[in-house]
Image (cartoon, rainbow, N blue to C red; front, side, top):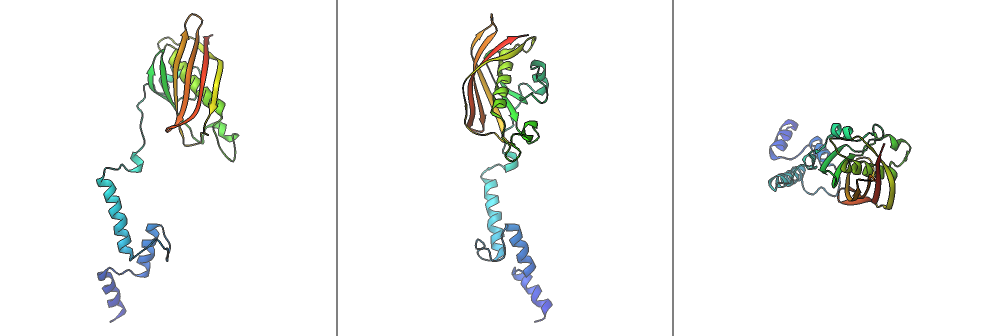
Length: 214
């Protein structure tokens, strides 16, 4: 049989040429002779394709569609009408839950573009713990202040029982929950329980005291 006829027969039988095999190995992420490739390349491709189809039939969402999108109760424009903070110290991107005078949940998307990562630390970027506490205080300020009449500023009066559980790094979404425990409107003093999460992990907790004033 001629060389041309042999190549044609191989294609009809599904037997790969060397170039076809190398291409299949590249698609599967392996190397020629890799131990995880069993059988011919066409069977390996069919197995992988079948697994993908099974995931689709089971209703498993694609990875790019699996993140949670929280609808804002307050977007950044509404936040900036309440908080006096501005770049680089505005540390709340969105408020996703809010009860005025009771509690609020805010979000901070942590990225490598945050300016504090330049020095903290150049070889291992970690969000400074004091800035996590500052972000919690900002959410606390949103919870305690009147959004329709945000005339006063607020200041730290105390930080008690503060603990840092895990580092916060670029790519994390920091969820900031603050609940008011006591509010003395006459003296403008509020005590609140504050917790920060990344996913289900508690990364920071503290009891904050804030004072309202000018």
